[in-house]
Length: 181
Ligand SMILES: [Fe+2]
Image (cartoon, rainbow, N blue to C red):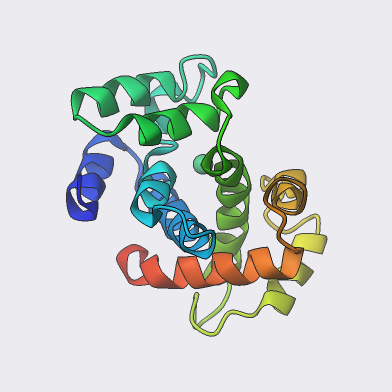
């Protein structure tokens, strides 16, 4: 499935525009991380794009979350590596590969970056690692963002916080035009 078709499916399944924009932001971060690790960046991008595909239908049902998305993805013929990555961000028993570790940290950092971009007149353009780190330490800024999940990039991916945030910013910038950032 190419990225245009994939975004079309994401548009179709999401009910809220904020959910769609969240999905595309994580797509961007994951693509950049996949490239960094020399992995299949389109697989990583699709895991990012689809990880919360059923968010608007399963928000009140954590056990069903990602499982409904997996059903839709299999029906659409999406490769199993992507389906597993989607399942893994919500259900530990599916966590086995590097992509499964990356999605949890990417999900959290994308939330922080989007919140940070929205309070800048230039949005994602020219965003700096140092200013994002300041926002990270400010607990009252984007309080819904799980800081511990961002820190997983160090333990699970072997990246320093600076490296991780730097890659995440670049990934977000690549998709920014598609989500008004
Ligand atoms: Fe998410």
